[in-house]
Length: 514
Figure 1 (cartoon, rainbow, N blue to C red):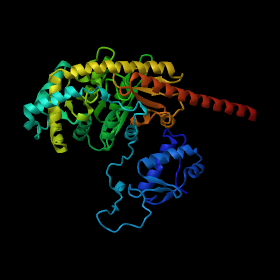
Figure 2 (cartoon, rainbow, N blue to C red; figure 1 turned 90 degrees about the vertical axis):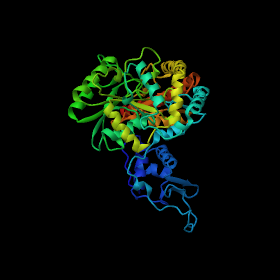
Figure 3 (cartoon, rainbow, N blue to C red; figure 1 turned 135 degrees about the vertical axis):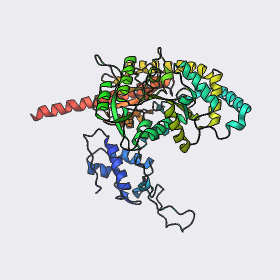
Figure 4 (cartoon, helix red, strand yellow; figure 1 turned 180 degrees about the vertical axis):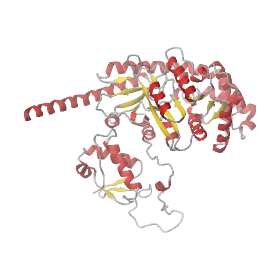
């Protein structure tokens, strides 16, 4: 019998517990390639769980390449990530499989990338609220082709060579003009071009943090930030994000908890998204922004401001960024066009004090030498010709309509006991199922009806709330948003009715027993 122990009281879904324990047995050598594991019905009886729980765990393990089912033989541990071979071994040669246990050699212990696999599972027949990314049907491809051709005609030999680590000069000049219009008086020495915001986070982590150092992250937070800092054995201190205003309270990062964390820890960085936070969609009020900067100044802790969603203000005047409000040069702002234009170009930037940029530039040289110059040259042209301004104006109208459809559908179809945030911009909102529901388990059944979302557990630094989830709206048009939400709500009502009947039966049984 396998040494498996599930904890029903845990916030982690049972099928995830089972999946992770089986993975640990494989990676620890207790289960070896070729070993047979129990059938789902057999293991469900042993563990006292529903067969669906085991089937879901096995499905995840099979999608990761760790197990394989064979008709008439059973389910087996796969050999070194390859299909099991029941034939005699091949003679030595170029085709010989490696005998290395690769998993035991990896320095990074993280192995679960379920959110990426969920995204990869999307197709045209699924209504997916998973991806917080631009709708590619609106990419201004013809305009961008004009910009690429213009850049190549003008200086093809230069932009196809190696370039400066801090960025292609004409692109930096265009960015500085954009920042000036944003109210940020930066100079060339304050700007570093990166391969997207993810590289910016990675460079900041390498420059500022050693293993054991502490960084404050929002809880829940952008998974890329959790992966970047957590993977380097940095202490990630999660500070709650308030998603609903209580009397006298405000949305966004909990500043009382932030101050308490700063007072009791030697924090090296505060990392947050003040505008249309991913995943909750909340934005920090102006007073909270000023209070945060005051705390950062008092405790002398730099603030990393992820500004990537701020240009997607869909319902009013944008608030000044932390960098715009900064008077003590404490804010390091990271940004890109990934959410407003072309995510595939992987061009972002960092705005910070000159000494910070200089150190980051040296670190970038050891990473990738420089960011793609053709992409920078084309984007510089795109900015100079006013094409970004026009494209952004168009996308704000598109996303405003889709966000309105999302709000209206949630209001119309969702049963009582469901709460969600009401952002007026960005790309996503946060939804809380009634207490006792697990979003990951609910997703399994909703996927069968052709609808996907991102379970909240993927976004938490600590203390995950199992009944939470993220809904992103840019990818679907209004008709499909309404259909997806209606399908979601219908299944939720069914599940709530089942639970209600189960509770009533239990009450009657208890009365009869008494």
